[in-house]
Length: 304
Length: 210
Image (tube, rainbow over all chains, first blue to last red; front, side, top):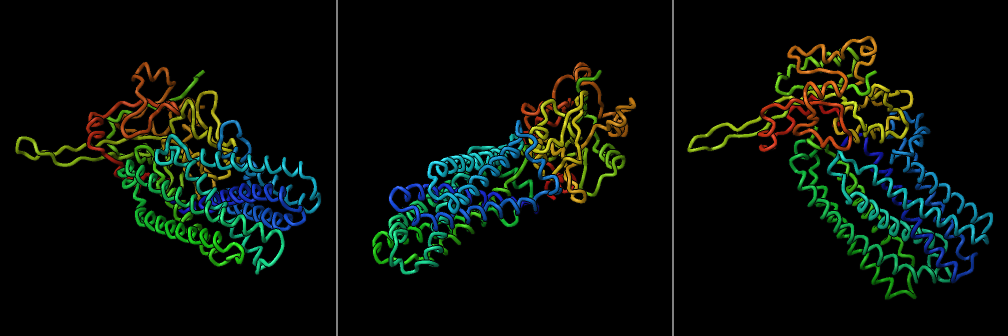
């Protein structure tokens, strides 16, 4: 991998995490608002929105380390007509703005539901377009290993997987801090109801990630001679791939155990902070390895 | 008025002396690792048994490639800051002051033309020696070639003179970018494709790996 691409590994994964958490948490918030008092929902919702904003800001900050001239970063919106990178930055800004507005509304105008819904929809669409434009950046005719539908599939799969796992972990962190026994309160009841869903979704998205990883690896066989010629074989992609799949399989087992536990012991459950954090750790490590592998297979047609 | 300047390269004539590469590097005082014009050494093949006799089936030839000042430059489309632009005579130029050093143009170009200067933090690329062109002088790479394997001029004029072939194994499909390039193939080209010859001087020329 080129040494300058570690910031991109982190930037893409953090953006995908932020968008994923936004989609999952705002859907949950919208569903919760229908069943619960706004005052019950707001603290958790504000915590999640603040987390999304911090993750987005971290992604934006890290992206500067990729730039040779960070002071010219403001110019990156200058070619919206043809550059996917310009479009990516535009949607990142819209997404971040919607998150800020939703966060502000949570404290300033908690009852303005219609306006909040507008920002939720706009933010969600901007987030989806951010991931789409991000994947289009890599679909270059000159780079056959990236130029396929696998790129958006991998990026959207990461978005959903990280979004679900991080939302669940953040939710557990929050409840562990304010209501560790889940003794009372509607959010505790809501958590008990939704945690099986989050665990089940995480397991499902993990299975999709494993499938995509295997299919992507099989596709790379076509370019084996190019990749060998480009001499980017250390550490061996095979070892990285194997380690990623092992981590994802371990995470599937843990997510399945979590799912069974939260479903069967819903009434006496604690936030299960440690299992969620371990699951998240496994997923993050697997995703970093996967993205490392993705950048590692960069090669031009002809290997030139 | 020239509409589209272009390079001609005769792979059959090139000996791989790299005078073009060095003349370019010298004139533009390029930093270590940056080569606006690169001589790729394509090599491959092995021994083959034929009628009980082992005979060599190898293909070796050189490709001298710089920026092809494409008619549809993918680098220009990719650049988010509009630091890359095309002159009226087709030369693709680069405005260092606008570059953010994101290196997206480097990925987008099928010919590795934009190259990153890590000291300046910006991309650099062949500008067709436009300073010499404006004084009616040829680019230095063309002047330096002792075998006259390189030529330059108006694309249509060159096409009349040398034909219209704009690609050769293992260069990329020219369709998306429409390079302003004409190539005379080496007689080993088809064999090179068959034996899957590869770039053999990667460490020397491939800036993208650094």
